Length: 95
Image (cartoon, rainbow, N blue to C red; front, side, top):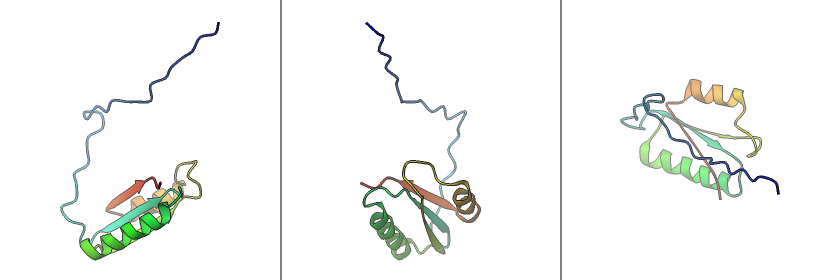
């Protein structure tokens, strides 16, 4: 009989190796990026989130970008743009 190998996908994060970035004191006047991964219903959800951010927190701008496919990471040019322009970036899954 063959061997069955079970892999554990969990990872422990050592904060000494990966310190947390300080949070923003406010979103007002900031540029917020949103990465839509293209999963089912993610686009309407992220558009609604962008509208709520604009109404409640008055950012200078909300940049909504959609990945070409949910099967891969965001393209480097998209990440470079968002990192270069944004004070904070939101990413997540639609369901």
